[in-house]
Amino acid sequence: MRIGVNALYLIPGCLGGTEIYLRSLLAALGEIDSRNRYFVFTNRETGPDLAPDLPNFQLLPQAVRAISRPARILWEQTMLPLQALRLRLDVMLNPGFTAPLFCPCPQVTVFHDLQHKRHPEYFRWFDLPFWKFFLFWSAQVSRLAIAISDPTAADLRRFYRLPETKLRVVPLGVDPVFFEIGKRRRPDPFLLSASTLHPHKNLDGLLRAFARFREVYPEFRLIACGIHGFFTGPLVALRKSLGLEDSVEFPGWIPRQDLYDLYERAWAFVYPSKFEGFGLPVLEALAAGVPTACSQIEPLAGIAGGAALLFDPLDPDALTGALLRLVEDCELRERLSKAGPRRASMFSWRATAEATLEALAAAGRSTVID
Image (cartoon, rainbow, N blue to C red):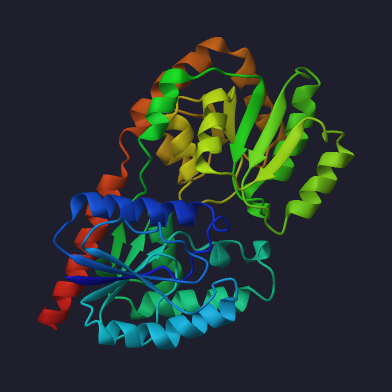
């Protein structure tokens, strides 16, 4: 097959988990597939290292910047279909929510969540029309839709009325390097949280819980690394009002090697999110053997599978209690450290790539059937 990959949305260092997904998926596809040809459409911000350096992978830089969403969408809707026609693509993979609405080949589009339908209050008013229009129609025009978790698949059925025959659930994987981290752990007195600084991540709730936690353990710090979203200002103000300026860090998006070091040294990992499409940082923490506490919501609880301490993210006492247990309960810490890698070993990027390739093949074959 001649497979197109629509990577026009990628802004390195600005997208969080969806960037990790795309890079890991392409690397895994390179490991398992030497037969099909991949044409990866990139923008001006994307570097030359996105696709594997293999004969069957070709980067096709486009003259558009993703930082300008209107320009990127216009290019995706007009120039990308022309490229698909010119290259005689058999199928187009759209890994980032949106697809060309008129495309000469079948399409497979990946939906990481439908947060704009479940929690529109977390979106800025001028962003919502974009999400509502393009995600709905991308789902309709795609031959197959990939959901990264069962809850996201349920949302696609509920909000977009997609039939089962059009849906595939393909969970994410975990980088094997995290299992190696678990073998050389050297915990320091700090708690780690890795997530974008957006309202639904509930970092404001974590700050309040951490302030109460520090009344008992003042030597501990909190590092919340991730992209500085539009909720960064209120979080910085809250940190100041709680007197946590010297004990809470917001380092932003950091290089992967620096993130590995944090997982290696963290005393525990905390993920208090109110909504998730998957929750990749939880899976990474489990793989690294870091004692982990996360929200008792799906899909986080299902991913953790009993290998994490669960709490109600809307209950401040429950969140504070989870932080205290992660420090005080040595038996719990040991159990979670051992259970985490076992649970995480059930997820791999190879399996993600295999299932994605199966979906692409099915979409491509359906053209002949039609």
